[in-house]
Every structure is written in C-alpha cells, then in structure tokens.
Image (cartoon, rainbow, N blue to C red; front, side, top):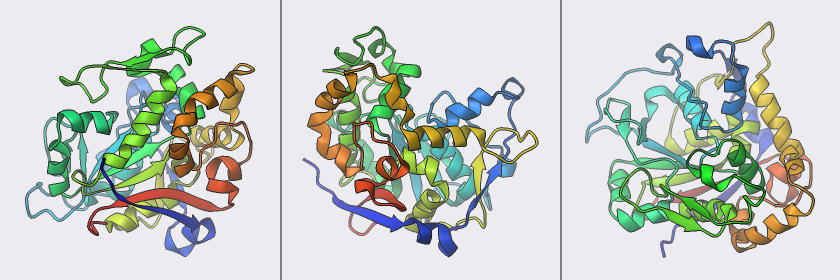
Length: 343
C-alpha cells in the first residue's frame, strides 16, 4: 500500500479572490470553421466533456520563450489525470491560456516532443492498475519534475454525465439497469497491453479510479494536486491561483476563460449553465424515484473517498452543501499530496 502525506487546505474565498489572485475575464478562442457558432461545443467544455477538444491558438497563450526540454530545464511538468467527463480538457485550456510555457505538458496524445509538450500516460487511466503493470513508469516522470493534476467530480453528477457521453464506457450505460449491472472497462490503464477490467457496477469505476489517485506519489510523480471539477467551474481564478502558488508560476494580471464567440455580451454561457447545475444539483432530477437510495448504497464502500472531497449522494441543494465540505461557506477545497517537500 502506497502512503502519501496528505494535506486538505480550506481557503477562505474572500482572501482567495481578493488581492492575492485577480478576477478573470472571458477569452474568445479562434474556432475552426466547423466549430463556428457551435454553442454546444462551449457547453460541453464547461460541463467537463472530453468531446470538447479545445485548441488554444498560440497567439492567446501566455508564452514567453519556447525552450527545448532537457536535464537543465527547471520548469515543472504537469500531467492532467481524471476520469472521462471530469473537466480534463477544460483544465488543459485554462493552464495553456494562463501559464503558457511556464510549465511542460505531458499527455499520451503528445507523440512528438517539443519544448512544451512531451509524451505522458493516458489521462483517464486507473493509476493503481497502471502501476501494477508498469511499476517504474511513473517514477521516470517524478525524476523529470512532473506533477500530476488529478480532477475528481461529484459521483452523482459524473454518473449522469458519463451516461450522456460515455466514450470507452459505452457498453456500461445502456438499458434501464445501467447502474445495477457489471461494467467492463476495456482500457483501464490506457491503450496498451493491459487487459480489460470488469467491475461490479459503474459506481465502482468512479470509486476505484478516484481512490487510486492516492498512488500518484510516492514512487511516482514529483507531486500531485487533486482538484474538484466543481471548484474549477465555480472558482477558476482561485483554482489557477492554487496551481500557480504550488508550482511557483507567475499568475497573469487577468485570468482568461475559454468561452464561445461573444454575441453582443460578455457572458460565458457555457460556464453559467454549468454553475447552475452544480449549485442546484440539477442532475439529481435525472434519477428515477427510489434509484438515488440504491446508488448511495453502492457508493457506501467509497464513503471515505467521497468525504475526502466533500461529496454526498443525497439531493440537498445550494452551493454551500454541494461545493464546500461540511457546508462551510466561502471556501475552496483541494488536496495536495507532497513527497519530500517537492511542492
């Protein structure tokens, strides 16, 4: 069993959003022709969907100087991790827009290394299953000062989101019994030689993947920061501030948001809709009568994991209860895993 020093930091939001970190503005990306006017694309990005493959134009990034990666490169590297539909693409867009080449980005999709992009592992992999087959692989990233940024999402919200956009879990979301039957993940550790895994139910996918982030360090990444999808959407400036503080990055004077082309106003429609769904727990209405209790029972074995991130499977409403642990108002929750004072 891997052990890591854990820190749960609860920051008062009036301090986080005060003089320390600036308030954000909206950034209008250069969409490709087939994306022009596609509001669904922006909604998907803020709702955490992986279908929203956001490409930030170089002109919009906070680039200063492109440097080739080498042994003397003192920048931290970052590897985003997270289940499908937890906001991994949204986080990547935010990092690129606000920090540019202050960090190096690692991902399995980066096949041709450059000064800022290097090949990493599949961001949706189960860390425990990956380490069982490749026990030394993550340690090589640690030696390169790569920090994992792992996203987690309220399981009650994630279940409904994955049913809408299942990707590799498509076979697990069909039929009325989709939450009660076994779920087979064909690529639990990425697109490699690791065999598929069958779990008791879809709730177990959320629980086992989320619990496995405890194994990001030690003996793996240089460090890890666990970020809630809900905080990324509700408090993007504060979330970027946490990353900047822990990695020693320069915060921009104004935090940029990815948003659809402005149409006579400055509202981030995709983000606003996502915020409402989080604050009102609108996704709870998608469960048939009696099903919530069944889901909660199946999540019982992951109760400690849920509590660590302030999640509940019951349909209470209000931003304090859904967004902040133990109903405390105006606080940001994240978990920092540190190894030998690395962060």
